[in-house]
Length: 418
Image (cartoon, rainbow, N blue to C red):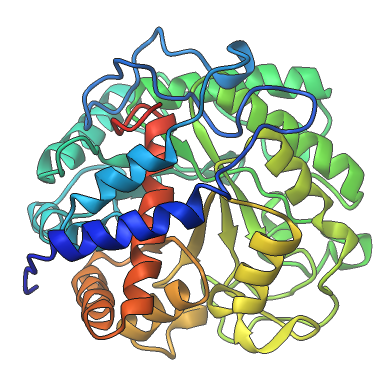
């Protein structure tokens, strides 16, 4: 990777961007003064890279009126980064949940990875996972005032990456759906506390996809793995909100997935190319769980790797402006972090790593999951090269980096609270 010293230009871009972001920073849901998101930063958060905002950091639901991170301060913090460091804030690079290989650690530092995803299952327990998260943070020389965000897929059932001593066994979403909303929220708080103690900041859950009854036997990615809360969008919405709120009570961020929904497809985009939804439209009633999750304070929305014929037949959702910019930002009014599904998955493998990264950001996305760390450097270089040649794209990088840093500030991982 060729390092670039562009702090002055990045600072000007951040300053210009503040006027845009200041008018669209996330506001509190109706009926509460608490801002969306996980535990907000206090005046004295734990130092970046600590992996926790400390046991005394209150969650939004317990601290009405806690101010959200300052957009101006976050933009200024991002403006102090050079281009490569800004690009690094847009990368969530996967590592093995059971341990960090030295070569992968070098890659994390080389690309200035701002986020790390623990991928693969482990039953080694919380102490072992905590060691892995610590190793990941220590492998990366972070910019001053900004720490590394650690994430995991901890939905429950067949998708519980972290298990063993110190982690409760989490039932599948199908089983969680039988719990009352209050019970699910309380249980999710406990599951979130396990994650927080292991150094995990964000849970890439819950699944907000609705699987129609007639597709339950053929839907591979959701129903086939018992990952859904049901076929009734209103019921799914309540369970999604309860899960999000419970995780927030524990100080753990969440990501709604997989917009616009994988409930009406058959193939699994992790292993299948050209997965297509022929039913979901731009105002689909099955968006209700995503809306409920946003209202409950979800920090991120994950975009699917499938095609949606009735919305944008020419682009996969993860590369679609109609879906990310028009629907997520516009119709849903979501101002948090838009995260990709795995950009190393089979469904997107027909494109080079460089094109996947650039097209996701061009469509309006913010944070890229890179399941294959060997592709991270090519992706980072492609994004930086594009930004050097295209001022508008450079503005997009700064915009997205500021959103990511605002999220980190809420989680006690960045020093730009108001």
